[in-house]
Length: 163
Ligand SMILES: [Zn+2]
Image (tube, rainbow, N blue to C red; front, side):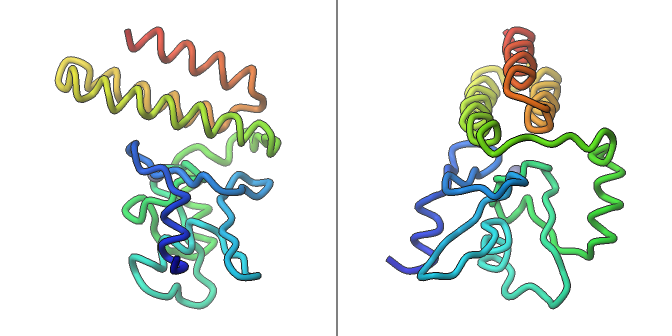
């Protein structure tokens, strides 16, 4: 298996965001190990699509979903760009942290929730477009939750609202 094949075999591409199913670092970003090297999964995915990343540049998410490795959801920029992006999206407010275990649990929930969104969007594309938007916002809230209880509560609320 090539490095690229091994990488993509660990990605769940069933939802809008493509979720890295391998290990995560304590910040919730995917980590790809290959022959004694390790690289952040979203950086690898970006380089696969766009070529090598320029020196000093970081790879950021349009979607704010840290384990997402879908190239179209990624952009490169400076730390300064990322800070502006974070402020614009309200990510800097509160500076909540979540543990690795919670991230793992939440990731599997997120994958399930995204599948539910995709399924519902196919079944009722127009009528539920607003609900879909609300739902995706709820997914981001789940990721930013301080703990799993909070994440579950937000997820259940979102599912009930969607019905
Ligand atoms: Zn994404």
